[in-house]
Image 1: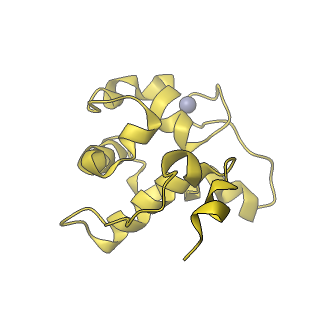
Image 2: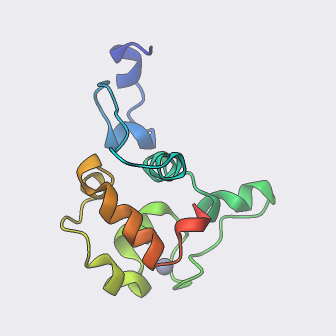
Length: 120
Ligand SMILES: [Zn+2]
């Protein structure tokens, strides 16, 4: 297990911004293995749709939905103007809230209604 002091040095890492304290991290109840993988990928911001360009040794592309900003999980969850309607299902709008365990089912629903689910 990583010591809290070492974890605190991870200030610029994406996961630290969402999960600053090392506490047990249970999986959402009734979640499938696939959903748990998706949840973890969304929390660290590394998904197929946002990182496939690295495998292809290409520069980071713009969001294919709006072509208006570099693709990222934060862009898809919070900013993409083409997902404004689908985003209304979220009761909270901070990235941390959206990726919290209490909103897990909203996240999965959002990814399904936006056809992103199979691209995470
Ligand atoms: Zn977009």
